[in-house]
Amino acid sequence: MKKITYVMNLLSSVIVSPRSGQALYKGIDEFCLSPDVEIPDSESNEKHEFKVIYPFYQYGEYKKYDPEHVNYYLPGSSVKGALLHRKMSGTKLMADDVQVPSSAIVLQSLWKAQYLEEEKKAKFALFFENVGIEMMKHGTELEGDLYLEENMAFSHILELANNDAKDKISQMRTYLQMLLMRKYNNVDLKNNLHVIEKNLSTLQDEDNVIFVGGYKGLLHTILLGHNMNDLKGGLYVDPKTLLPHGLVKLQQVIHI
Image (tube, rainbow, N blue to C red):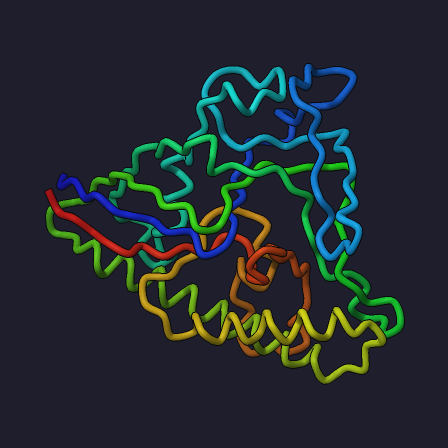
C-alpha cells in the first residue's frame, strides 16, 4: 500500500465525540476548570455553566475535565468514513489518528434553529444549554497520513467525497431557500438563515471540500433524492462561521 500525507483545513468547527457513555458529569466526575462559555448572540456576553460535557477524542481514560493536560486526536476512522464513498465500500483505505493540539479545542453548546414549523416561535437558540461539547474550532490546520492500494488514486476518492458534499450542500441550500420564503417573526433568524445560505453558496462549487464528524444535521448526512417533502431536519450551525459543523478542505496531498 502507498502512503499519502494530507493537510486538512477546517472551514467550520468539527465535532467528533466518543460514545455517550464517556460524558463527564459535574458532581460525579472531576472538573479541573470551570466550564463556562459565552452564549451566541448575547448582547451582555452572558455566560452559563455546563453540567455535562461530551469530550473530544483523547488518549487515556475519560474521568475528568482537564483540557490543559489532555492529548486530543482525530480518529483515523473518522477520516476514513468521511472519504470513502458508498460506491467504494470494498476499497482498502487505512488512516492514522491525527494529533490535535489543545489550543484547537473549544467547549461550546450546540446552536440550533428551533421551531422552524412555527413562524411565531422559530429562532436560533442553544440546544440543551447545560450540555457542552468539545470540538475543533474553525481555522485549525491538521496534517495526517493514510494508506491506499497502489492502483487506487487518492484524487478519485477525494473527488467522489467532494461530489457527495456538493450534493448535500445543494440539498441544504434548497431547504434554506424554502425557509426564507416563510414569514418568520424573528428578524435575527431570517438574517442568519440568509447568511448561512450565502456562505454555503460560496462552497457549492469548491473542490476538495468534504464533511467530517457529527452534528451536521440530517440534510448534510444523507441524500434524500427528489422528495422535497423530506427536506426538513435538524439545523445545527457553527455560530462563529454560520456554516454547518464538519466542513473541511483537503488543501494538499503529498505522495511519499
